[in-house]
Length: 353
Image (cartoon, rainbow, N blue to C red):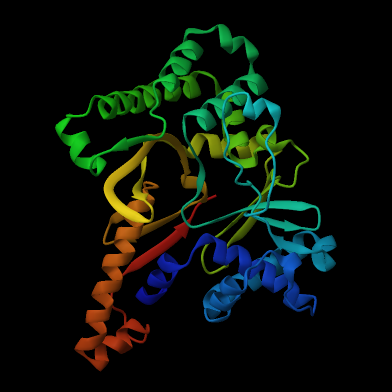
């Protein structure tokens, strides 16, 4: 059983912190000082050094990689998630412009996508979703383009909302149905989940290729491009359960495809003009894929926070942190409990592969 405090630490740590900790561990094993080739910023490095739990997880994962792939022992390690890259002409032909690499960590020539905790394979707007959809069709069965299912999904994606502005937060607008564009988008979200979900069910190979492209970015960046991930590096937060999977492995892609949860929704960001908040919100439609097979389920007295709703996790972490600061103030006994010396709350963390 993990102490309650460890969950709060995990909730506050960013995925890129774990990426950095693994790279730093490789430098440590090789007896080198961190340099510009690492891709790890000084701010992130300082944050890792002040968090021994994350640093230790990075060490465990680095050692596991070397054990499984000994040639990486002396290889250059790099946090690659912010590297500059380019898109294929195929991808750009669908209007997609997002250049975020799928590769999080580059070790020698091995390209890893790191998944710790909640695993989101993609969260793409209309153009990105269309490009992924078309890629999966071409890779699985081009004859699908003549099917009614293909035409239905394509038509729904055309109705996705692209970069629009709402006068307020979206929740009230969704609830009172007062905004025609929001209403149109919400209908498209529901319709695409139904239609694409049925297409997945009826065409297993298409579903597998959709998952493979979402994981790898082979058609997005080019199969040999460093931005395209060839391995999924999956771990729990403590580094006690680690696995490496090749995205070329059809059986693994099938497992991911069978376990991924499709979600269509709005994404929003507060709108500013000259750095000043306007009270308005930018919003657009996205398709997200969340994978149970690579995500950690947080259970608290039978209630599971595992829907892939990242905003809910943030809210949970914020509320939990407020409660624990009050908890500390009450007594020494509570502090001892928090440190794990006396059980406080039964929490269970598990990862399924």
